[in-house]
Image 1 (cartoon, rainbow, N blue to C red):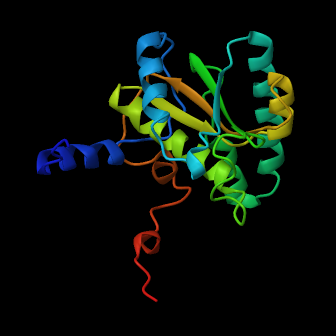
Image 2: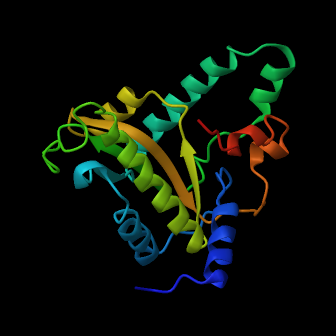
Length: 210
């Protein structure tokens, strides 16, 4: 067994603290070996019943990328209409995706029909399949940070529309759409904190006893 000493734990803490949701990317390509290494680490993530339901799809076709951008723009405009006054103005000033700049687009989908794992652990909580995919996304995100890469999770999309655009099996459900590349800038604080949208919630870290 490897020894995870105090120095390692401090470095691990730095990795978690510096994982950012990146929206501003440099144009230089991501080395294929680094991308593959991050994917290999993500595949070590736990999954319910060892089902491994994640499906990583690299979106390189310009037409498919354009369709994703169009979905984002439509959904983003609709979301802006749900706010009023100063909050609406602030929303419209936010940069919420790096779809046009990021050299790598990854769609991460859940294979809801997978037979791997033989259904173990999800009879009463079938959503555990998709939660497993989220765990793999987090694993990829942290691995990418360790390689100096930034990742942005774009959630302002119509998942059904994006899945159709990608021409994936009907049983694959979009969980995450990730922009990947080298960040233009580095900040310890999240962009939404820096922009004044939402600060840190101290209660989110509170341990509740029952």
